[in-house]
Image 1: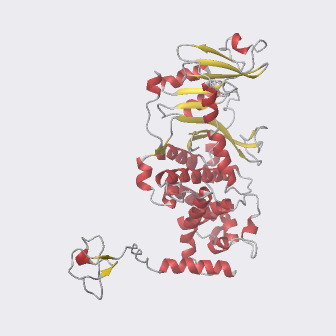
Image 2: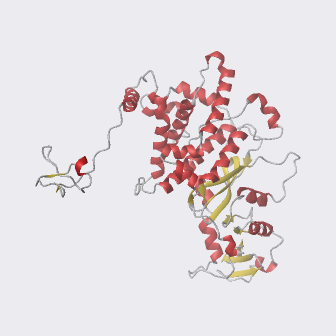
Length: 472
């Protein structure tokens, strides 16, 4: 059975992604496609007409991409907690913000951006707490597994997107930096932290009864479609029955175990007579349990359906191989939290659907970076902060079309200069690529003794063509 578990596709971008990702912008559009943008545009224009009436000018895809590009650039400059007006400040702001759109326009779009029909929301919200962004969220989540195949190890864990406004399913998690926010279950590749599947926790069911075996349900749902992988999870999810269900799907499991699980034998829980760095193993036909004592009178319990021996490390602490594998793969989701928070595009808002959308942008930008890095490994190879360079180029690519069609120049000289440069580059025909530098050599096909590095059509078969004064 374990041999069947290891049968899987190689890690990396799918053929679908490789065939369509030919630039940084096109890679981003794979995970944030025009289909989703069209929904946002339709609902935003509808809300704009409701709020501003005849004064509202319908926004198009160029406007929306310019808005998203500014959000991403604001994240590049780590200004998520900075006042938006300071980004447009005459002296201390960034020229590209004023060059793209006025601050008033940015505020207006932020005010009316919507993801569903406001008029039909009450009926949908009665049966779905995520009604305000359900359509956009589901379409976006369905795209994530189509672009990337995870490696052998997949991490399942929870994230907390910080939010302190009004929300019917806001969670309090004191062990998280934000403490209050929206809980999201995530399955991601343990090596690259590519977000492969996500699910928002919307609280208790409609009947108000606590859900049983919630951890098992979450793991089975977010890993649906995987085969031949090893699922690493913490003690909230790990159980004997979960391991059995995953084996039926040709998936292995490695995870920590809570000490109150009824399937644990009493011998593994006793620590009074245990020596430091000692390990005890219990085997069944499909599972292995290990109790490891990192210090006296304290033990750590792990369960695995992948390992079938009592291997321990040769280091002084003598950690079992199960623990070493768990420690290597447990941080996939935590790393996703870290990388998306460093260059986050989120802005201050009291609307939880907008908070979810900001998080979608952060994850989409990171997933696009993982895809592009795998497709073009030589891109900026050896440079520090490759992700920052990726996000900066992505943001500039998104705002460039809006800058090109701008009619009036901004008042600040730097922004006006930037607008004129981008518009001039757009009007200038693309120059022919420079001819590669070739060493001067004598032509093998001609009788002359002249040397040159210019290649001519009559001598195209030569490695290097020799020409002088029009003679070959």
